Image 1 (cartoon, one colour):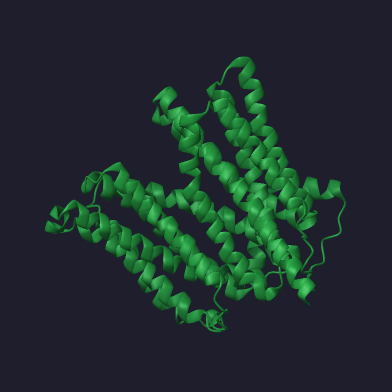
Image 2 (cartoon, rainbow, N blue to C red; image 1 turned 180 degrees about the vertical axis):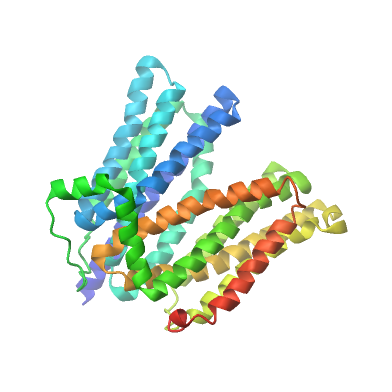
Length: 425
């Protein structure tokens, strides 16, 4: 028994090591290349194009990635894709050494890395329930959130330091080898530690699988959606999650930065600290949740946590109402740090139980397709919220949007509390 627990612990350590190194590589590359584009071109359009190239593959290819993850050896996929990421970055170094670091090379590399990361993220996400026993699912999901947050905090810091201290060429070489180091860590993970009863894979020839994956993106999406629709708790969670994702993304990605930078005239340093406080809240809460005993019933936490997130969105708009926007700058600064950290705490208290529940309700042979479908839906709806809120900012007071969004989430959480499909959650 002790030996089995030891193997499980090694699995968690290797998984988290590979995850952090891979995520750090992605965040550092994104930060440094974005900085290079802005400083070289001074063009917002060029910068926006690089962001678009990193977003589109995730939205379009996630269902295909999910289908492949369900029918192939996930360990081979994960290890191969991290090695491929390293080769792509090192390839950028090689070609730029000959022809110079041209924008077309950067755009191509960004696009290819986004494609690879899409397949990597869906596959490693689908494999999580196989890496540990069922009772450790909360722990590994919590630590996954923590590693994501840690990478989001450290990526820009390390990227900024590296960009200023070493040449971009040397920086990219280090970045490329970091992906390969991640692959080495993942090679030693036992991806079949927890083989569940519903783990049968579809028996199809490789040619058939590949042709089906290419033949119809809509068929792949429908496969995942159909399964989600058949499992009522997952379907109910998905509907609420998409609504919350739309409203939360529009507020945090567009409205909050506008309020802080434009309406309240806070400094870029203060804005950075406020955003960092969110990631710090995620990191700390994830670690704490991962070390607490799992609650048998999570429905009450789900409802209360969601309502509290809605309340925090309302609080984002409050400082711009009437004379409140003329309060001392430091008061606004501390206020937003508290709001963002509180929001991040309740977000984790909601997200981790949802992730664990979906992993337990989804059989292995459908895990990739379900995750791929969810990624596509979530990835597609987030930009929609950003566009809508951006357009609304031109015609309404900035505080109106977060107050309305937060109110809708609170009302939706009350409706969710009456949902029969979630009562046993």
